[in-house]
Length: 167
Image 1 (cartoon, one colour):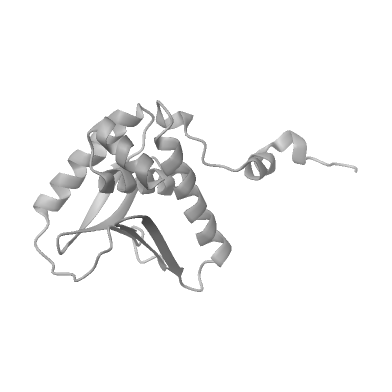
Image 2 (tube, helix red, strand yellow):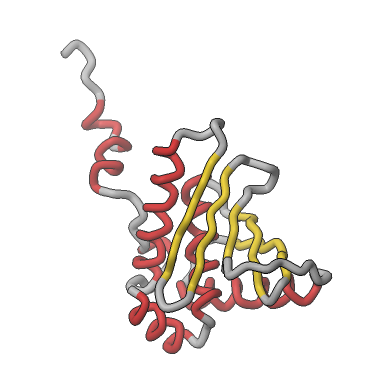
């Protein structure tokens, strides 16, 4: 996926880190059912909040919007020195007990941990949603075209196939 990410970021003229942040923001919004997401990013020793508006539009428009917000948030944040190669960290709007660390070097590395407030399954599911969104972002024209649920999850949400009254 790393070569695909590099090629895709060149085509849409957005930094690879922005593509990852945008995919993560969209994954959070889909996972939480919100049109916005808020998480922390790390860049050049700065830690800063990033808000993404995940309303439906073309993937390119969304990426440009995230890029603008990313640069603005970075510029407005005072310097907080952090020795880290973490590209992105999600901690939620309030301390949610979830932390994702996504590193981008020769390959994309995702590490996550959670408090006892969340089952490991929940965090693993969010990581899978992120992976699906990132892949979908590189192959879809609009945000609404991105598939972020597995076939099994779609079956679980299909009310008609799950109703077994009297069975």
